[in-house]
Length: 299
Image 1 (cartoon, rainbow, N blue to C red):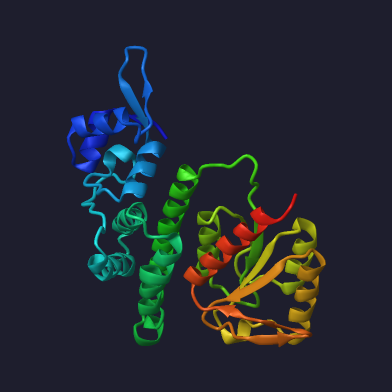
Image 2: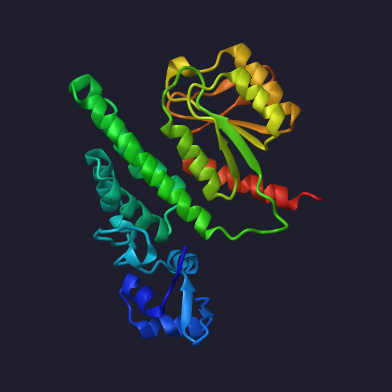
């Protein structure tokens, strides 16, 4: 990403140029200086400041977030439902540009990737999912909405990577997984990978139609800390023997197996219970707990 002048950042945020300069002079906003002594602000630093302070963005174009759009951040909790409905409507109507803009606004205002996935993205897909049964064109609407969700998630992942502050003495843990069975649902597993990256994990997403035997081999090869299964349909639930093999593979590398998705259920496999996560927000909290546990362990 490129750098901004105080004037450009002020235009993006709808504040005065003097305010931006004051924030920089007070040390709240990190700047560099050109050979001529002019202040320059990296876009990643501008995004960090916006997200941490919750200040609004009125024009995303200087930040490189959208070409043309009306952009307003959700800053008050009583507006969240309205903003979620607007994002869901953009997804359902196939307006990819507006969906990216609205999701970016939510993220910069402090909403987590998990909350955006649990809220408007899931709301939109639940709305268009049954259309194929009611409307001959429903399958096209669903596929279009899925593609808009893909684009929205990729934009959130781009922001996540741009704003990441690497910690040299704290390597990223690894998670691998996908959607088993004959599932063609790519989106749920992509949501899981996006949440993992937002929580500063490395994610290897094997996508849909993932054979359990292949996943077992990948567990031995990659030796992750977490293995996930995203189960959207009842017919995609692994059988008892498959789950047992996967659980043994996971335990052999001292990893954890987590499952989720609308068709996931609590299961007893061999000697232990596997509990599903009901939401990605719960999953994100679990990931933070794993990171905290790992940092407290002796080297």
